[in-house]
Length: 126
Image 1 (spheres, rainbow, N blue to C red):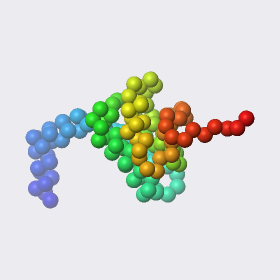
Image 2 (cartoon, helix red, strand yellow):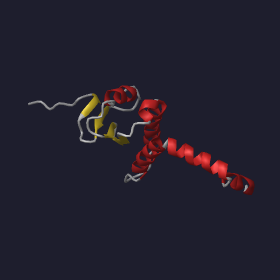
Image 3 (tube, rainbow, N blue to C red):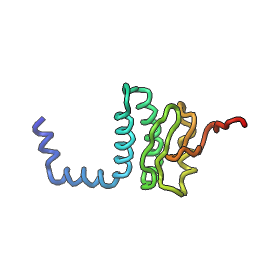
Image 4 (cartoon, helix red, strand yellow):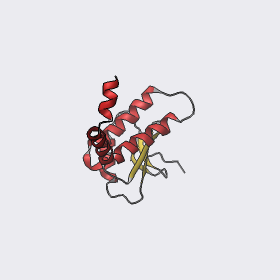
């Protein structure tokens, strides 16, 4: 155990870890923000919701172009609706929605203002 700790504090290992974290900082922060907001939600922690959030984040992380996007800040669930927190006017939103639309368990995808991006659009009868 002590040997592993000293290996981590080796200057070369420490530099490699710092370089890795810096290169993937947007992905790490996105996972952190998304999971943090899910865990701070009132009520019980539901493993199914965490699994769904992890599936969404993994789909984003698997696509190199989306993983490095600084405009995508956070994803969260509101029931069965996926809420994307992005910068306004982001030009890769359609690609992100196409990537996330096939994930089972998500009924709709909306932006942070509630505008429907994909899924069933609910209209009210007049």
